[in-house]
Length: 241
Image (tube, rainbow, N blue to C red; front, side, top):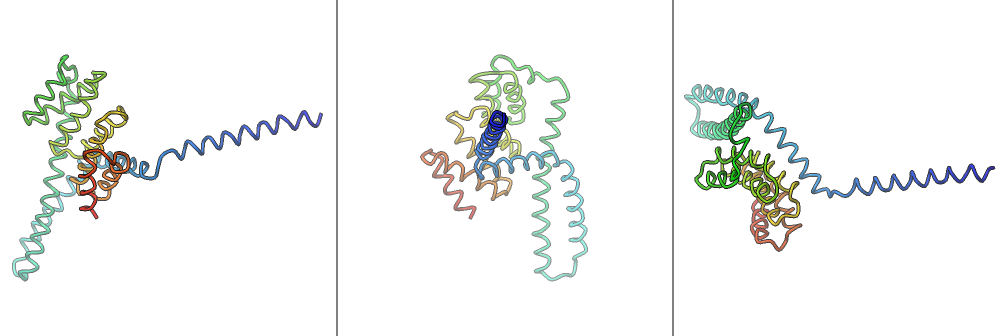
């Protein structure tokens, strides 16, 4: 009787131990670099959702700087030059945020109303591509979003990548980085994955996020060291040091 009771307990312990080892194995599959890249993309998503509030804060700060510059009538030339530089930097930040907010607001309006882009014609990808080539990036983005939602196969793949390209060309770098991330999730074995990684890195660099950009340039070098973009990625990493 004692032997029969002991054996099931041991089996349960062995099964629990095997389950724990399996969990530990799968939880450690992702590398530290991959986890860091995912964290940076999550932060970027939060930044995009908060950009409207940030715009108001920056505009207030910009007005305060204007008042301060008006007050500085009798300061030294060096102090005046420094204040002017600060004002110009703030103006650049305001303009960058304003551009991003306008893009988000326009997208929100388009999503709130029915649009032909949501029901694209059979040649939706070609239509979006033509608009992109003509430099009409906002219109191209709208059409391509519809194509991504409704198309399958090769057309969906091409539309997803071109969507990221269109957003990047329109200087909506945050959204571009996220769309290239979606491309990599949907088509992880595609030949354009290295290009998507390189575009992600460029998007972060364009937002003056050097640390994040370096992560993606490094990923390209580690995973695709012989790709044609590897040399450019290596040069960018040196510039960011």
